[in-house]
Image (cartoon, rainbow, N blue to C red; front, side):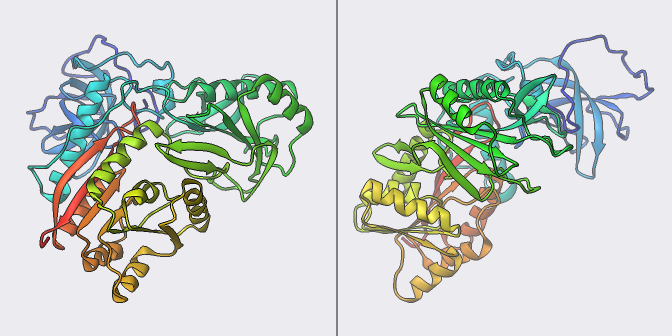
Length: 487
């Protein structure tokens, strides 16, 4: 975990000089009437976890965000920045320690920044995520009595990620793969990450060794020398097979034949070796060109009874075990009898629509990205979902057109990006008047804001089911059921 300046926090107890610091700044207690400036030290009680995993307390009616602090703790913190309504501060010392604090199992926790909550016991993480949802609805929808179900967690909240996209680099004469530390371009090697499936760690480490042996170097942005930008691995949870993609800054891959031979010999679980070229200065991971060097073109995967065939660039949920639980909540919310028309307004590769298809009369999925629609159609054929149709377009335009032609959906499902639903789509949903609206969200704040609009448009909030899709992080997924007031 890092603070907002990218520096690791320090939770160790150490002598504190009392009223004045060595810099001459006073220590302000919560009841102090003194103004607080950047550089001051304050004493604050942490009330909850924020959306980014930071501890949130209050000082003189200002929210104080302290990375690394936990609810219930009293901490001394160094003020980094003050604004009209909030402050950010760096944790200096814990005066009262939470019983939920633990030693992070990963030694890179403070450097990496990929996880935010490893210093918190798992039951406490689940409670904190429920509170995130409650706080979002209190703040943005003015709902204090929320019909919130207990969050669905994991029995084993480790090794769940089925895909890794790790940046390549060269440090201390070694090939490394990992993520950039928060607020910097320093690469932290996380090829042994405990939340990734063990097969991904094994493949990544051995591929790095093979690349080093063959003198195939990582690409260096500063010098524009080298080859490999990113190593992408994906494992099929049912088969155990791994799809490996090497993303390069060059249109060629040096020693390609030897590379393929050694990977096949040393890593029998690798079923696909792919090469993607990204030779542009872009934050995007993949380039436009992908070719299969050896093995299967696609990786077979399943969710429940559904079958999927995944190309190297295809989207698929990162935690299949929890995805099944989330989609079961969606199915419960839809309450299908076999007579309903279901519209999936952000269908992506069709996973939710196909999950509902066996209980529906018809499913229509809408998605703006043509490649995702092609994947959805292919997945429908694999799963035998003949009643599912997937269309390229804007849901806020297609939905009103269908309603005007007399095609009115019984159930609408939305699973938008973190920014929430387009305001025009919310209006189109209200005009379509479906009996049930199932809203899947990865952001409690935008979920609450959109629900406030929908509640003003004739819907009633029935229940919210949080699901812990990404343990050890501050992210929480929710399935929300809204029904028409006049039904």
